[in-house]
Image 1 (cartoon, helix red, strand yellow):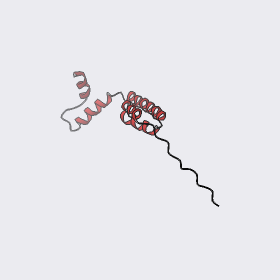
Image 2 (cartoon, rainbow, N blue to C red):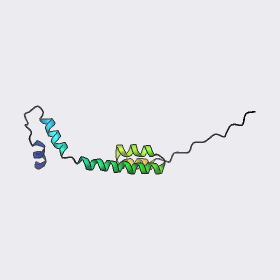
Image 3 (cartoon, one colour):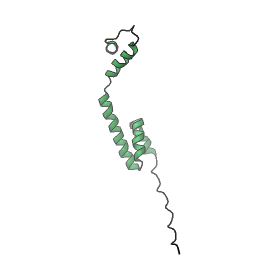
Length: 94
C-alpha cells in the first residue's frame, strides 16, 4: 500500500490547489488501458456471436458492451424472437 501511495503522490505538492487532479492523473497512469481495451473488444465479439446465434445480434453487442461477460448471460437467457406471422396474400382484383 505504501508503494501505491508513493506512486500516487510522486511529484505532487499536497498544499497546491490542483493536488487532487495530479494524484488522480498519477493513479490513472497505472491503469493498464490497452489490456482493458482488448478485453472489452473480446467481450463484445463473443457477445455478438452469442447474439447472432440467438437471433439478437444488436442485443448481444449492447449487453456485452455494457455488462461484459455478464451480458452474455442476459443474451443467453432471452428466448429466440418468434418469426412474424405473414398474412395470406390478397385475392387478385377483378
